[in-house]
Image (tube, rainbow, N blue to C red):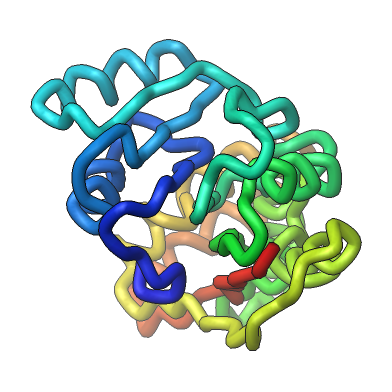
Amino acid sequence: MTSLDLRPGQALADIGCGPGTDLARLAEAVGGGDAVIGVDQEPRMLEEARRRLASRPNVELLLGDIRELPIPDGSADRARVDRALQHVADSEAAVREVRRGLRPGGLFGMAEPDGDTLAVADQDVDTSRRFARFVAGQVRNPTIGRDLARLCLHACMRIRPVEPVAALFRDFDTADQILGLRRNTTRAVLAGTMTEPDAEPWPQRLAQGPVVAGFTFYPVVAEA
């Protein structure tokens, strides 16, 4: 939120808001009125968000797709997307649509991983690479993180300095939860990406430690 320079009185769109995890904090940052709009394409997510935010009168929840936002032209001071563009069919059109909804000088904050940078340290480098390729292939846009700046420039937006962040995991349970070491290994075998003789001992070795696994995460802020 700091990178978006949120202030009382601003209108903010949280696109792909899900069950409203961040909406309460955002509403506090921008103050009263109908200042925060949460947009999601899943009715179940919006239903949960309404339950969580029943006491927040300055939050409006709308059903919609990032490629066709239910907000007027130039109506938002700030917009944010957190790990949603990696799943969008036409990410370039999505960025242009967010640009449409922003006022001149408005800020668009994005945070997306770069799936192609996923790496897991192990003596069996080939199996680790196969795992990484499989995981990256489970999302529509695995390299969206590195593409954010280019997409925003194509949408005629100015890019603020980009500082990639290394998401590093040294604890097996945490790495397993975030990266799905066990479950994605099983899926990769079923998909034929990893062989069962190589895959079976791989997570067992990782569980014994030490664990070094991670990927690059791109937080990007663009100005309309």
